Image (cartoon, rainbow, N blue to C red; front, side, top):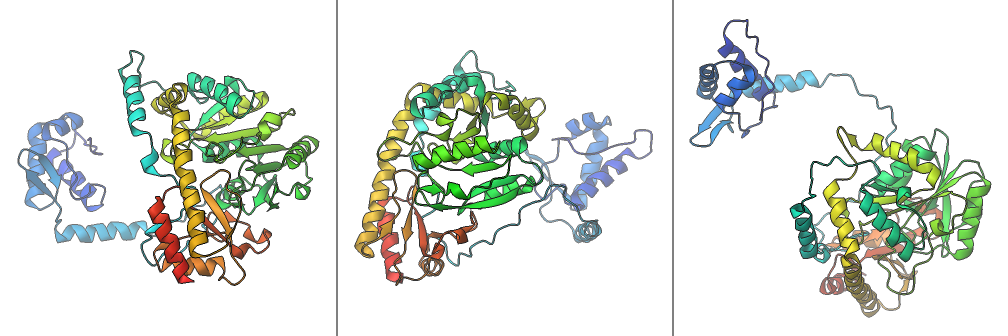
Length: 488
């Protein structure tokens, strides 16, 4: 490690200069207790002074208690700094507290109120969760090693904003077969997940005053993202057939954000008739649709509905998918399928959002291994495994509710990893029940939680409880619901 020191070689007492500057780094907190300093030879080469100058400065700092030498290990900042260093540090802190406030040019959405958890949650029915035990460790490790041992392995490859060509080719084939989306690899842009895809969409479509239609209830963080770009959010109610299209705004050049395959958080599917009306609306109002595909791979029965993108003949739909639910959110790989005329501006937007000279885009190795994971058939095998696992947990959750609570009214759970329970009239409200269960170390969720917005557009919104099941083993589900029932 190099130190941020500047030595005037023409001035006297080089040793004093080194001493004062290292002392300043320590007392200001920029060199923290326990930090290892460079060796005397390395620092002398960096500063262009003699090694004896550095040794003498180190010895003085050690004698005054700022440094300590560990035999065979080097020189470190002392863990017990002398008292006078603390007073200097306090002075430095005080001097920095009177700076002028920073004014942000991009509005930031207000932080939603967070739920207070009085106890550690043991049985967490978390939404959009995954089970780390389901990650295909051995296959992923083997494919990673195979890539690293290949003669073509090059971790220094800087990548392109559009993403690895072979992964885009593989995705084009996969989406054609599994979703019915006809697209070329050139229409696909690899992103770091849904959030980056939405930022790209905002760059493309949103200006100050642009109307963005959002499902209500829906994802509050998405509304905040579009609002930060200057959008006017137009909440559109959701019912058992998805977004109520007759309430879509009629202003031109609008944007609609929808989750038609599995609406978040209510879990309903957009009906075929409404899909047609939604596409006609986009064409007639010169608007665009951002379609996010939540959890279609995790489907327990029947074929998935056709995406809006597969029905789009007007070039109005941007399709967004990711591998967060199917493989794991830590992978940080998603993708966008765009109409041809939007590909170039989308790539430019990705370059602005994720460009670190000379590198850009999602790391090459993750893309390459994901490509091999799909190409070799390992992804399909993995999907079959997690579908079986999560379906068993879904069935266990429903059975536990029926056993401990009685007859329950639940939205259909054909795909995804959480269910929506409409509470009986004689039960406490969802928020009250959440408070009660937290005391029993159980985490359940409501439409009032921070990541869900516009709950009031849904009638009786306080009567719905949300229960995720993917990350809990079946014995934990049984015990958690048993405890929940006792709180009633």
